[in-house]
Image (cartoon, rainbow, N blue to C red; front, side, top):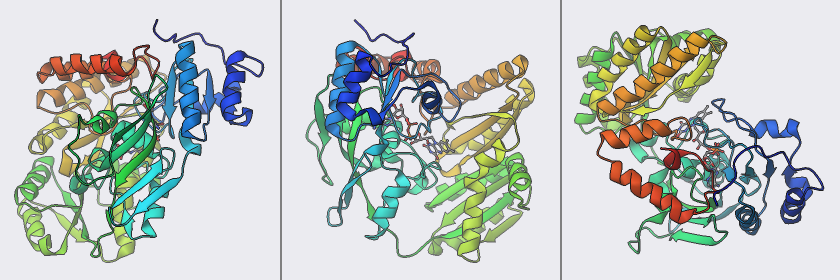
Length: 468
Ligand SMILES: Cc1cc2nc3c(=O)[nH]c(=O)nc-3n(C[C@H](O)[C@H](O)[C@H](O)COP(=O)(O)OP(=O)(O)OC[C@H]3O[C@@H](n4cnc5c(N)ncnc54)[C@H](O)[C@@H]3O)c2cc1C
């Protein structure tokens, strides 16, 4: 029998489920009142579903006992970090939600073997603060690093601004401890620089969106903080064709940027309006970090491709100001007062210009406003669709625009997600992508793997691969 999904009333003091969970984690670590469940009923894109109860476990053994209990009772279980995901992955109706944030210890910083071992509930920012004391850092840097957890970032395979140089979370996980849906604890991988023993279950877990098990501990690669900082440039262009030619040529010239970001005119306008800045409202703005020896060659490429402005940050304050333009983009757009849907499509870098022009074409055709920003060096585009939540026509136009953005991405050899994942939002489109890219057999295997891990279907059910 599969897990029961809906209609579950929040258990209260005295209910058998409440009593059993209180016996494991203590009554003070349960959340069952409707008002307090609100916080757990939504992710940061507004996907909503109210859980039955939230437990805040303090140890791996508690997680194991809770998952075993849920398995015996066929109740869905959803691991959760900060709930900052944007696809509905961390909300589930009637589920037992495991808020992992009490488990936030750094267990070991190994400065010889270059890894950190930490519990799943620590935020990436706190992890990096701890590593800084030893002169190390963990490079993947989602813009949500101040709140998102190691467990959430591993389960989402998150990316960020530095990923053009360092890769995403997937490139930095050595080993994991996982509570499986059957209640057993498994150890995947080893804290070794090289390890070829067995199938790579570590990377099966990375990006599994809480559907295969609960990560309790992660052992992550770390590297020393570089002695020399790259230089930060802000560039503007009058059109996307020139900007995208500059992006492609920089990559073709074998220069490796540390960060390579883009924003469109309307995003800069939103930033100027809501953050009281006075940035040049050019059609295309790029922000790029380049190591000093490559600076001359990079500047020459940008100027040759028609950059109308190339400004190098003169000091640390200006470097931070350029960074803030990019990192505050989402908040500035939200400040426009419209409902927003943030998308996450990846295309080959040499198709980026074409894709960005298509975004504007789709916006005009559908009668919606779409602002764009993203990671130029990875071809990762974040179109932000603005719409009126109270207007049925506007909602429908936004939805159709979203689907068209994904489908066009698939048609140019891209992916429906580079960082944010699939959740419930993109399950149908995942199937379309796999079909279009000869991945039907791979999707079938993924569905079988889900059943091997979770035959009763209790772990974050009805989402992602299972729903595709
Ligand atoms: C303002 C903003 C900026 C963002 N910027 C970025 C960005 O730059 N790059 C990027 O990649 N993403 C970004 N995101 C999306 C999101 O923050 C990331 O996916 C993040 O890593 C999720 O972490 P979390 O702790 O909030 O996880 P949650 O949202 O709580 O959970 C996400 C998924 O992981 C699962 N999960 C959580 N903890 C565990 C665990 N211990 N074991 C197993 N599964 C678990 C959940 O079940 C769920 O499926 C952004 C979001 C916001 C709101």
